[in-house]
Image 1 (cartoon, helix red, strand yellow):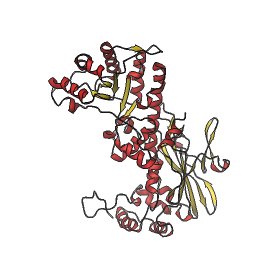
Image 2 (cartoon, rainbow, N blue to C red):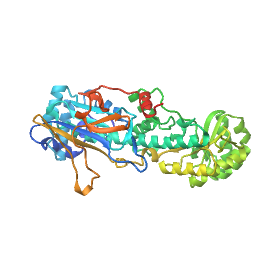
Image 3 (cartoon, rainbow, N blue to C red):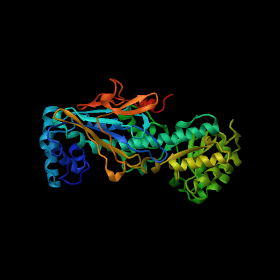
Image 4 (cartoon, rainbow, N blue to C red):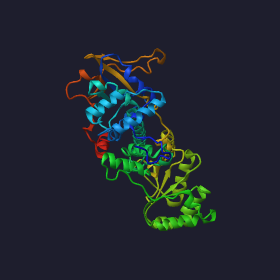
Length: 472
């Protein structure tokens, strides 16, 4: 079994589950106490990320789709054993052979989790995992690497996106009087800045829980294939610098005119800073092309792409108002006619978006004038420490008796203290409460089974997740 992309004949299968863990975990099967039968672990975001103190759980189903069915085969085991021996480890061949022989390679584990799309404070467990066969106590920790990676990234992007969309929504209501159009106020520009196409797919889908605007096609594919979304997001025709500069500086106006003529209807966006942004705004869009823009059955979105956005964005909006006019919202903020809008994608992150909106509001400009395109700030400029994500064992069963497991390093001064006992979560009128699972009334645990013994036992659609994330 080899990778189709391998360049040498001695290749191994990169999708082999035995390779998808941290090396030191290969030795952990022998380190648990004698008589260990079961291990219960949980995943949580341990802390808030700056001002974001609500964490959205998303992305587990993407990983479950990979773990479902026959996860380990004899061929995988036979391939991995000598490879990992050469790496320095005598792997637990007997344990993996037991899974192959007893379960036909399906994983004897139980995963219980919050519904995807759930928004909860940091420190609320999002997932609980245990082995279902006492011979496989070692499997829970073995899966930590891939489970934690699957959850922290997608949930961090979803939480970031939800926070930013929420801030835009609040400002939109303040200046425009309603949240109309909020679904397209934060656009995903992040595909090229992601570490891989898989990251773009996962992060892109996470953003789409909160917004319908995206240029990350991989996220649409993920949303369809894993969550059943027919079409989770939308985009518009837009120019880039290569198309606007292809005829040279003297030909920029003609390229802009051609772009409009090729797109006589609908919303289109045009980058306008290739040479002189304010010339483009005042002389091209607001001068030579003004009548063409007003005659279109649609909206031109002007895109600045350089400079200080705290100055550039309001200056561009006000310059367009000088050429196209404006009206005032019921709240008294100036807004462009529907034929013209602005999108800012350069220098956009969770902090700059708030600063830009504060600047617009201070200058009496409605947020409805503007949309944001967020690239690396959405899909890349974050990590596991943003929310302090961790997976920790909290209970083990040894010779039929459950024991609490926890860590409390003095040197961490409480920052890394883990939870004791089998973890559960109860939803109350006051919010979520962390409790020992055994103390929660039957049927009251918010952590519900999603995966058992190789089968996904609860599927969520993208519509389901959006309904959880944004209840009416």
